[in-house]
Length: 101
Image (cartoon, rainbow, N blue to C red; front, top):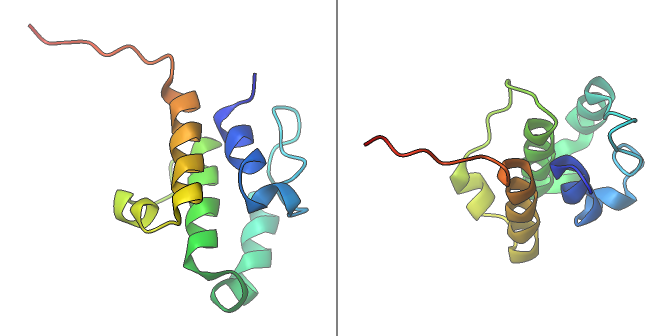
């Protein structure tokens, strides 16, 4: 079964990007290389939606330094929002909800 981050990569444009396409449980994403690559040309070439998906991927990979909000996710195109929701479902699928009685 895929991890949440693998799910997001395989269902978005990231599966074609050499920085992300080989990501799996054995091969982690090199975040220094990613942000160095995207920092120079980020907004001109990729746009806001690409950066939001990269930030979501970094969160799914375990980074606590990422700041991405629901409003940014809501602004994504429908297929990208769906990909994020499916990845989050994988990440939190086994989390038990407890009620305070």
